[in-house]
Amino acid sequence: MNIKDVAARSGLPAKTIRYYEDIGLIKPARDSNGYRVFNEADAHSLTFLARGRALGFSIEDCRALLALWQDKDRASGDVRRIAMEHLAEIEAKIADLEAMRGTLSDLVTHCHGDARPDCPILHSLGADTSSD
Image (cartoon, rainbow, N blue to C red; front, side, top):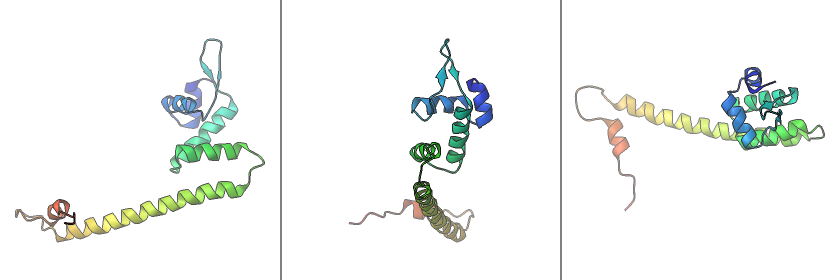
């Protein structure tokens, strides 16, 4: 199948597929004219990568997960470790976002939003936080 076909099957743009080839995530065969020729295994790998990226796994995590997925003698603990590390990163990002939401919500609550120039939001953003 050609890149257009495998792009439609995997849900990835052709540009992303070419990038994944450039960085060695996939290695499609080449036709005599130099065009990429994708097989079923390539299509499955690309779908796997699309799902992994949709879950926020990094390229390197996807590389490791793809290798584990293709290794039938893998230990599921290796897969779980990668997923748990990624989950911890997501939870840390959520905590950071919740803290940002709380701070911004407090600032918005204290801003009158009227014609006066006094604004706690701008005051907070412009505050000098360096220590002397």
